[in-house]
Image (cartoon, rainbow, N blue to C red; front, side, top):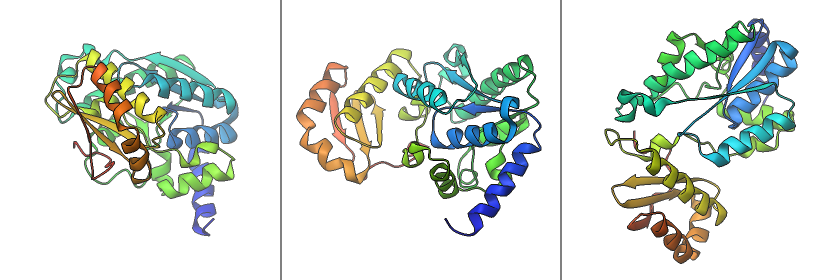
Length: 264
Protein backbone atom coordinates (compact mmCIF):
# COMPACT_ATOMS: atom_id res chain seq x y z
CA UNK A 1 0.00 0.00 0.00
CA UNK A 2 1.49 3.40 -0.97
CA UNK A 3 2.61 5.47 2.01
CA UNK A 4 0.04 8.23 1.43
CA UNK A 5 -2.95 5.87 1.70
CA UNK A 6 -2.63 5.17 5.47
CA UNK A 7 -2.52 8.93 6.04
CA UNK A 8 -5.65 9.49 3.96
CA UNK A 9 -7.30 6.48 5.59
CA UNK A 10 -6.65 7.97 9.04
CA UNK A 11 -8.10 11.24 7.78
CA UNK A 12 -11.16 9.38 6.47
CA UNK A 13 -11.79 7.83 9.88
CA UNK A 14 -11.54 11.28 11.47
CA UNK A 15 -13.98 12.73 8.93
CA UNK A 16 -16.46 9.95 9.68
CA UNK A 17 -15.99 10.24 13.44
CA UNK A 18 -16.80 13.93 13.21
CA UNK A 19 -20.18 13.10 11.64
CA UNK A 20 -21.26 11.81 15.11
CA UNK A 21 -23.77 9.44 13.50
CA UNK A 22 -24.12 8.52 9.86
CA UNK A 23 -26.52 6.99 7.33
CA UNK A 24 -24.68 5.70 4.25
CA UNK A 25 -26.41 5.66 0.88
CA UNK A 26 -25.67 2.05 0.01
CA UNK A 27 -25.81 0.30 -3.36
CA UNK A 28 -23.59 -2.75 -2.95
CA UNK A 29 -20.90 -1.17 -5.12
CA UNK A 30 -17.38 -1.16 -3.77
CA UNK A 31 -17.46 2.55 -2.87
CA UNK A 32 -20.54 2.31 -0.68
CA UNK A 33 -19.41 -1.03 0.79
CA UNK A 34 -16.11 0.43 1.94
CA UNK A 35 -17.73 3.60 3.31
CA UNK A 36 -20.30 1.54 5.20
CA UNK A 37 -17.67 -0.82 6.65
CA UNK A 38 -15.41 2.00 7.82
CA UNK A 39 -18.41 3.85 9.28
CA UNK A 40 -19.43 0.67 11.11
CA UNK A 41 -15.93 0.33 12.55
CA UNK A 42 -15.69 3.99 13.58
CA UNK A 43 -19.25 4.71 14.75
CA UNK A 44 -20.64 1.27 15.62
CA UNK A 45 -24.38 1.41 16.27
CA UNK A 46 -24.39 5.09 15.33
CA UNK A 47 -23.98 4.10 11.68
CA UNK A 48 -26.38 2.45 9.26
CA UNK A 49 -26.98 1.97 5.54
CA UNK A 50 -29.95 2.59 3.27
CA UNK A 51 -30.46 0.69 0.04
CA UNK A 52 -32.90 2.43 -2.29
CA UNK A 53 -34.54 -0.07 -4.61
CA UNK A 54 -36.77 0.47 -7.61
CA UNK A 55 -36.95 0.12 -11.39
CA UNK A 56 -33.47 1.58 -11.97
CA UNK A 57 -31.66 -1.04 -9.88
CA UNK A 58 -31.12 -4.43 -11.56
CA UNK A 59 -32.54 -7.25 -9.40
CA UNK A 60 -29.20 -9.05 -9.33
CA UNK A 61 -27.54 -5.91 -7.92
CA UNK A 62 -30.19 -5.64 -5.19
CA UNK A 63 -29.73 -9.28 -4.19
CA UNK A 64 -25.95 -8.88 -4.12
CA UNK A 65 -26.20 -5.70 -2.03
CA UNK A 66 -28.40 -7.40 0.54
CA UNK A 67 -26.05 -10.40 0.77
CA UNK A 68 -22.96 -8.24 1.24
CA UNK A 69 -24.65 -6.17 3.94
CA UNK A 70 -25.53 -9.35 5.84
CA UNK A 71 -22.02 -10.74 5.47
CA UNK A 72 -20.40 -7.49 6.68
CA UNK A 73 -22.86 -7.14 9.57
CA UNK A 74 -24.09 -3.80 8.30
CA UNK A 75 -27.23 -2.28 9.77
CA UNK A 76 -29.36 -2.05 6.64
CA UNK A 77 -32.61 -0.27 5.88
CA UNK A 78 -34.32 -0.76 2.51
CA UNK A 79 -36.65 1.76 0.91
CA UNK A 80 -38.31 1.70 -2.50
CA UNK A 81 -38.11 4.59 -4.94
CA UNK A 82 -40.98 5.42 -7.29
CA UNK A 83 -38.91 7.77 -9.42
CA UNK A 84 -40.61 6.78 -12.69
CA UNK A 85 -43.83 8.30 -11.36
CA UNK A 86 -42.11 11.67 -11.73
CA UNK A 87 -42.97 12.86 -15.28
CA UNK A 88 -39.90 15.09 -15.46
CA UNK A 89 -37.57 12.18 -14.70
CA UNK A 90 -39.42 9.71 -16.90
CA UNK A 91 -38.78 11.95 -19.94
CA UNK A 92 -35.10 11.21 -19.36
CA UNK A 93 -33.63 14.73 -19.55
CA UNK A 94 -29.91 15.42 -19.32
CA UNK A 95 -30.35 16.45 -15.68
CA UNK A 96 -32.06 13.15 -14.75
CA UNK A 97 -29.35 12.41 -12.16
CA UNK A 98 -30.13 15.66 -10.37
CA UNK A 99 -33.86 14.84 -10.29
CA UNK A 100 -33.16 11.35 -8.97
CA UNK A 101 -30.67 12.63 -6.40
CA UNK A 102 -33.26 15.05 -5.03
CA UNK A 103 -35.72 12.21 -4.43
CA UNK A 104 -33.03 9.90 -3.03
CA UNK A 105 -31.90 12.63 -0.63
CA UNK A 106 -35.45 13.02 0.65
CA UNK A 107 -35.72 9.28 1.25
CA UNK A 108 -32.35 9.18 3.00
CA UNK A 109 -33.25 12.16 5.20
CA UNK A 110 -36.52 10.51 6.21
CA UNK A 111 -34.71 7.30 7.17
CA UNK A 112 -31.97 9.19 9.03
CA UNK A 113 -34.52 11.23 11.00
CA UNK A 114 -36.56 8.12 11.77
CA UNK A 115 -33.54 6.42 13.33
CA UNK A 116 -31.89 9.44 14.92
CA UNK A 117 -28.90 9.65 12.60
CA UNK A 118 -27.44 13.12 12.17
CA UNK A 119 -25.52 12.92 8.88
CA UNK A 120 -26.05 11.37 5.46
CA UNK A 121 -23.21 10.35 3.13
CA UNK A 122 -22.62 8.62 -0.16
CA UNK A 123 -19.58 6.95 -1.71
CA UNK A 124 -18.61 9.69 -4.14
CA UNK A 125 -14.80 9.71 -4.26
CA UNK A 126 -12.18 12.23 -5.31
CA UNK A 127 -12.06 10.79 -8.84
CA UNK A 128 -15.82 11.23 -9.29
CA UNK A 129 -16.06 14.99 -9.07
CA UNK A 130 -14.65 15.70 -12.53
CA UNK A 131 -16.67 15.54 -15.74
CA UNK A 132 -20.44 15.73 -16.01
CA UNK A 133 -21.85 14.95 -12.55
CA UNK A 134 -25.18 16.78 -12.15
CA UNK A 135 -26.14 14.65 -9.16
CA UNK A 136 -23.07 15.64 -7.14
CA UNK A 137 -23.92 19.31 -6.59
CA UNK A 138 -27.60 18.46 -6.16
CA UNK A 139 -26.69 15.99 -3.44
CA UNK A 140 -24.49 18.51 -1.67
CA UNK A 141 -27.29 21.07 -1.73
CA UNK A 142 -29.64 18.45 -0.26
CA UNK A 143 -27.30 17.78 2.65
CA UNK A 144 -25.51 14.65 1.45
CA UNK A 145 -21.88 14.61 2.57
CA UNK A 146 -18.96 12.95 0.81
CA UNK A 147 -16.37 11.60 3.27
CA UNK A 148 -14.14 10.17 0.53
CA UNK A 149 -13.94 13.56 -1.16
CA UNK A 150 -13.30 15.31 2.16
CA UNK A 151 -10.41 12.91 2.86
CA UNK A 152 -9.02 12.97 -0.69
CA UNK A 153 -9.75 9.26 -1.16
CA UNK A 154 -9.54 8.05 -4.78
CA UNK A 155 -10.92 4.93 -6.44
CA UNK A 156 -7.54 3.19 -6.11
CA UNK A 157 -7.47 4.12 -2.42
CA UNK A 158 -10.92 2.59 -1.95
CA UNK A 159 -9.79 -0.69 -3.50
CA UNK A 160 -6.70 -0.68 -1.25
CA UNK A 161 -8.86 -0.06 1.83
CA UNK A 162 -11.18 -2.87 0.73
CA UNK A 163 -8.25 -5.28 0.55
CA UNK A 164 -7.10 -4.08 3.98
CA UNK A 165 -10.55 -4.97 5.34
CA UNK A 166 -10.60 -8.30 3.44
CA UNK A 167 -13.60 -7.21 1.38
CA UNK A 168 -13.60 -9.61 -1.60
CA UNK A 169 -15.39 -7.12 -3.88
CA UNK A 170 -12.30 -4.88 -4.01
CA UNK A 171 -12.05 -5.55 -7.77
CA UNK A 172 -15.78 -5.44 -8.45
CA UNK A 173 -16.51 -3.46 -11.63
CA UNK A 174 -18.49 -0.27 -11.29
CA UNK A 175 -22.25 -0.35 -11.84
CA UNK A 176 -24.76 2.32 -12.77
CA UNK A 177 -28.51 2.74 -12.89
CA UNK A 178 -30.40 1.30 -15.83
CA UNK A 179 -31.38 4.75 -17.11
CA UNK A 180 -27.80 5.15 -18.37
CA UNK A 181 -28.52 2.56 -21.08
CA UNK A 182 -31.04 4.80 -22.85
CA UNK A 183 -30.21 8.02 -24.76
CA UNK A 184 -31.24 11.30 -23.16
CA UNK A 185 -34.73 12.55 -24.05
CA UNK A 186 -36.04 9.06 -24.84
CA UNK A 187 -38.78 8.06 -22.42
CA UNK A 188 -37.79 5.64 -19.65
CA UNK A 189 -40.27 2.83 -20.18
CA UNK A 190 -40.43 0.43 -17.19
CA UNK A 191 -40.73 -2.64 -19.40
CA UNK A 192 -37.70 -1.60 -21.43
CA UNK A 193 -35.68 -1.27 -18.23
CA UNK A 194 -36.70 -4.81 -17.27
CA UNK A 195 -35.63 -6.10 -20.70
CA UNK A 196 -32.26 -4.36 -20.41
CA UNK A 197 -31.66 -5.87 -16.97
CA UNK A 198 -32.48 -9.34 -18.26
CA UNK A 199 -30.24 -8.86 -21.31
CA UNK A 200 -27.32 -7.93 -19.09
CA UNK A 201 -27.95 -10.96 -16.89
CA UNK A 202 -27.65 -13.15 -20.00
CA UNK A 203 -24.29 -11.62 -20.89
CA UNK A 204 -22.96 -11.80 -17.33
CA UNK A 205 -23.96 -15.48 -17.30
CA UNK A 206 -21.89 -15.95 -20.45
CA UNK A 207 -18.79 -14.89 -18.55
CA UNK A 208 -18.52 -11.12 -18.93
CA UNK A 209 -17.01 -9.12 -16.09
CA UNK A 210 -18.34 -5.70 -17.13
CA UNK A 211 -21.47 -5.15 -19.24
CA UNK A 212 -23.71 -2.36 -20.44
CA UNK A 213 -26.51 -3.01 -22.95
CA UNK A 214 -27.11 0.39 -24.54
CA UNK A 215 -30.38 0.66 -26.45
CA UNK A 216 -30.93 2.59 -29.66
CA UNK A 217 -34.49 1.93 -30.81
CA UNK A 218 -34.63 -1.80 -31.58
CA UNK A 219 -30.83 -2.17 -31.43
CA UNK A 220 -29.09 -3.58 -28.35
CA UNK A 221 -25.44 -2.44 -28.36
CA UNK A 222 -23.30 -4.50 -26.00
CA UNK A 223 -20.38 -2.79 -24.29
CA UNK A 224 -18.03 -5.07 -22.38
CA UNK A 225 -14.47 -5.08 -21.10
CA UNK A 226 -11.73 -6.16 -23.55
CA UNK A 227 -10.98 -9.31 -21.55
CA UNK A 228 -14.58 -10.50 -21.96
CA UNK A 229 -15.06 -9.62 -25.64
CA UNK A 230 -13.60 -12.86 -26.96
CA UNK A 231 -15.84 -14.97 -24.71
CA UNK A 232 -18.90 -12.94 -25.67
CA UNK A 233 -18.10 -13.28 -29.36
CA UNK A 234 -17.59 -17.02 -28.99
CA UNK A 235 -21.09 -17.28 -27.48
CA UNK A 236 -22.64 -14.76 -29.83
CA UNK A 237 -25.27 -17.11 -31.26
CA UNK A 238 -26.79 -17.97 -27.88
CA UNK A 239 -26.57 -14.36 -26.68
CA UNK A 240 -28.15 -13.06 -29.87
CA UNK A 241 -31.02 -15.54 -29.62
CA UNK A 242 -31.66 -14.61 -26.01
CA UNK A 243 -31.71 -10.88 -26.74
CA UNK A 244 -33.95 -11.38 -29.77
CA UNK A 245 -36.34 -13.24 -27.49
CA UNK A 246 -36.33 -10.18 -25.23
CA UNK A 247 -37.54 -8.09 -28.17
CA UNK A 248 -34.36 -6.55 -29.57
CA UNK A 249 -34.31 -6.78 -33.36
CA UNK A 250 -30.59 -6.17 -33.78
CA UNK A 251 -27.79 -7.18 -31.39
CA UNK A 252 -24.33 -5.68 -31.78
CA UNK A 253 -20.99 -5.90 -29.95
CA UNK A 254 -19.33 -2.49 -29.61
CA UNK A 255 -15.70 -2.84 -30.76
CA UNK A 256 -14.75 0.18 -28.67
CA UNK A 257 -15.67 -1.80 -25.56
CA UNK A 258 -17.07 -0.57 -22.26
CA UNK A 259 -16.90 3.18 -21.67
CA UNK A 260 -18.33 4.61 -18.47
CA UNK A 261 -20.78 7.39 -19.27
CA UNK A 262 -20.67 6.73 -23.00
CA UNK A 263 -24.19 8.11 -23.39
CA UNK A 264 -23.48 11.34 -21.50
